[in-house]
Length: 258
Image (cartoon, rainbow, N blue to C red; front, side, top):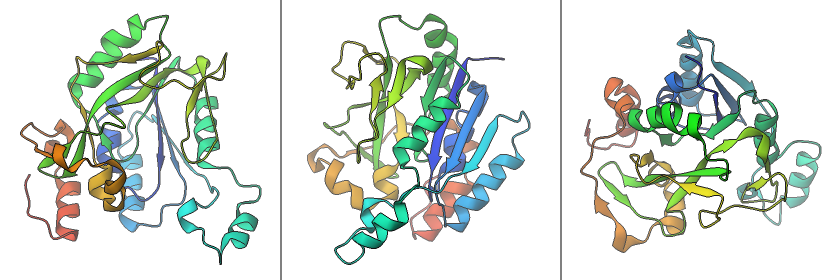
């Protein structure tokens, strides 16, 4: 079934990339999976597993060398970094590459730590895309920020996350560090408060594992008073194949919860 949807994913050392891609695989025409320098052996193995299971040949996999991230900069290394980055694309430019490489009318961003529910994806391809409002340019999805495997928190900074957009109406702003998508006709950035931003309130919040997988990000995102017990089910793909989450828990000496 054609869905008129392309998934755009940029990955670098993502232990849940298998789940992120498999959760959306049946709901898109193409998956642009661009790796910007993974060195983690599990991530590389998981990508190869995804390619091996790609029986419908939906996945377009590319390895793209990009400029070093700012986390690598210091007073001692800045000159080396500047020289090293000369001529290489930034992550934002890679996102624009993906827009340029998209042939469907709509694309959806799915990072390697974002896992969707089946009901949400069914709504996107069966209802939202065929009836996409002409006055909207970005769709924001609700999300559960996972602090750990059995607790979540609400981020006031990012209560929803813009993920679905019309391909021909947006471009990428390459200003570090935000990688913002802009309205192509005006150059205006749309946040969830913009009138052309559609917030979905009738779908299950997707599981966003960034803060669990990257604890150093918690200080920027976690309002500690809003951490609550997660009493819902995880996205279905986790139950269909628990290997990847079990591996993560084993490596981090966490109790198995699945």
